[in-house]
Image 1 (tube, rainbow, N blue to C red):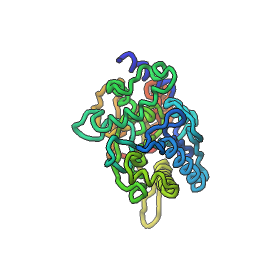
Image 2 (cartoon, one colour; image 1 turned 120 degrees about the vertical axis):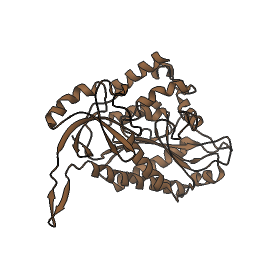
Image 3 (tube, rainbow, N blue to C red; image 1 turned 120 degrees about the horizontal axis):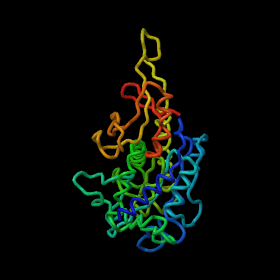
Image 4 (cartoon, rainbow, N blue to C red; image 1 turned 90 degrees about the vertical axis):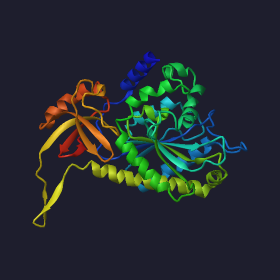
Length: 358
């Protein structure tokens, strides 16, 4: 298994594009879960399929974003009822240089009582004192098991076994790079869906979903209700309610885009003598290698010999290396750093404020 994990990590590092981060959110990829020979979850009466609901809602979301955010390029991983490998879904997003990946799914349970929506980002179980797989392992196994329908999946996924918790260990090494922004969008989604056609809010979770693993950008997976629950199913079968769900997701996207674009602004102003003036502050530059919800020791092996500067940002910590007053000096080190951290990017540091630099 350790050998398999090593090769999967190597494949990931080779696949991630080395392009600089955009200063505004310009491309989003929407991923309708399942499709073709993979129906996803099926209603108890056998008349409704997850793949149909996810495609319909995703297409509606795509059209709404195009109409309300005309400067944003919107791509779908599938626009009809066809099978798309989990690996290919990430490849589509990575090749497009997407700034955000939204995977749309419908939940299911052996019981009829569970209901509501939930939002997931890549990572460990969100519950303290639980192991990585204790809480949502059944959901993760169901969503990840579609790789078994793919030809030669053992070669494509280098021995990944969707039923084996050990297969998920390597995912922990990948979760930090875009965690901060993924969690930010997840919160906008959870807030926007509140009060909508699917009533219950099941919260935001960090879980090892394979479809999120290879995406080289902020990514979320949203479960829009339970197909196994009669009330949720009634909403999903209703065209007007599906349109409302798409509208609420679009609202979340617009709020996230506004926040994302604003965070890319590098100018800082203060008011002095009733006149706005540019703030005079010590400015440094560095390379952000990842962000995470856990504060690691500077000597942690994850830093591969680098000594990071650790800066808090809300509920996450940003890890920055090669800090220097010279932008050119920091930039000159970026290429070598990317060999170890493909998602690394140049940042400007003013006090504890950190912004990406093109």
